[in-house]
Amino acid sequence: MKNVINGLAFLLLFTLSGCMKTVYTNKQVLDGYKTKQDVAKIFGLPAEKKISQTSEEYLYVFDGRRLKDQYKNVATVEVKEFNPYERYVIFLFDKDGNVVNRKFKGVDFKEQAPAPGKTVALVLGLSAVVTLFIIAAASSIDFDSGFGTGFY
Picture 1 (spheres, helix red, strand yellow):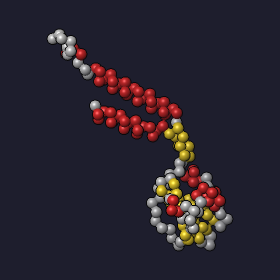
Picture 2 (tube, one colour; picture 1 turned 60 degrees about the vertical axis):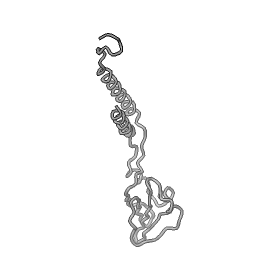
Picture 3 (tube, rainbow, N blue to C red; picture 1 turned 45 degrees about the horizontal axis):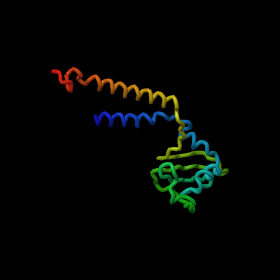
């Protein structure tokens, strides 16, 4: 019985993630930043930057969805090559400050919203499963055994 309850709890947690719909993908969110000012307004100072004669690249280091605290509001380091990080976003700007490319790894900026239809379907489906489980459990009890009635 404990395994059944654990299984139902796992099923509930697993299916609740399906109750959200993606409004904007990671790429769509990052494509919304068009200029160096747009990027600086949201991300602040980069951890590292590379400057060439025709472009500039900014690297932002993340810890999950947030910028790493150690890279917030500090001086930017100018480098020849970026250091390796597990979670980052790189913006490439042309000389006019327009974003011409974005690279990212290990970060997720997608925007999600609740999907009420999926939630209703999930609740109804789980209610049906629990009801069937209760019916099956009740039907497996042997009421004809005479247990507790005093008649054999």
